[in-house]
Image (cartoon, rainbow, N blue to C red; front, side):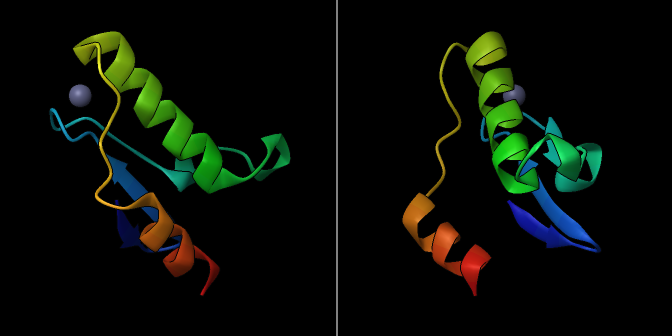
Length: 65
Ligand SMILES: [Zn+2]
């Protein structure tokens, strides 16, 4: 996950697939939650295991900062 202009980018930990918060509509809910859900669904579907973020707690603290 990285900060990009206007949002956040989530990269699969198993391949180069990525999504960004810009791909989602805020009317559907929290953009970061949608992006994180999407990248985890990708990893689960394609790699049969979820993306392993180094520390969700730390990232959430960054998100809230
Ligand atoms: Zn992947």
